Image 1 (tube, rainbow, N blue to C red):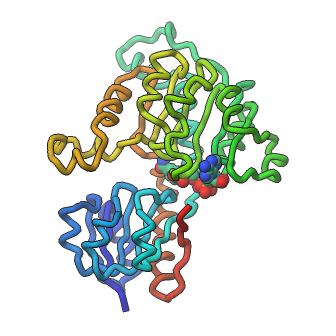
Image 2 (cartoon, rainbow, N blue to C red):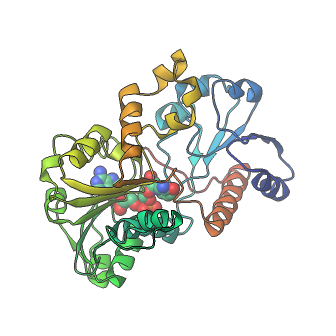
Image 3 (spheres, rainbow, N blue to C red):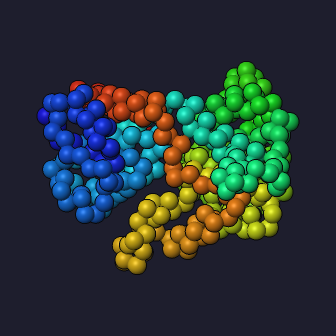
Length: 337
Ligand code: NAI
């Protein structure tokens, strides 16, 4: 019976929670992400339990000869290369949903921060300046929100947007006509979403098709003064396009929970190592640094999932995923898109 589990990116309370629910397994826990070094310590692992910082590719898999199952504690699974997994017949499960409200609420937190200048206002009052000069915002009511990706999170964002009195237009590969009717929004093509929206919010997974959905070529199609919100995946936006857009005034502001090379920001002490240079695009890493400094760009560290309630649901689904695999009936399996 495969029972050796190596689990990464887990705080001590999460480790305790998982161990208590699956005491029959032998656990090896790491607070850090899976990398080239710690993979050496888990050579006999049957099961890998990871989060989005742990990149699982052909090289990782080649070092884990006994691996039989992977469960990621995230909805997105673009950090797991599915092709070599399926070659080895290693099923991969995710947490398909842990409450779409959690990420949708974060998307709105980023948007409201921009529309009402919350960060700037708080910073100003902290400095003892109680004047409202320079802090004028704008209403969301009556503005057009363009939602790209109307799955679980996208639809929840639309519900919230309707509460704010926004007009909503959307684009999805598979339009949900029933939802459009019920929630009162319209589907259109991606170019119309670009040209008509005052605010664009991204909620698709990262796939070959969504790679650089917003890029330097289509930047000019965006409505001048648009606000971009991205809580989905960093690689949906070409970082250079974001910088260009802001410099040219096409993009008025951006609220980003994800960045193209976000993992690089956590590892910069190793910036000059060969490994770092192989793994990350240094040009993008530098562009990210410029982006972080812009006063109209607000970045959170891939934190949209991070609510107390969501974490509880993530752990419970992860336990279900592992139990399902151990019983020979894996659940929440992901497919290559
Ligand atoms: P979902 O699977 O319910 O919805 C995704 C939607 O995108 C679907 O309606 C699908 O048809 C659409 N789509 C896929 N490819 C497309 C394309 N090429 N063009 C247009 N539409 C396309 O997923 P859910 O739960 O709404 O999550 C969306 C994404 O949000 C996840 O894939 C993940 O990357 C990201 N996410 C980020 C989190 C964070 O902490 N920042 C937390 C959870 C999810």
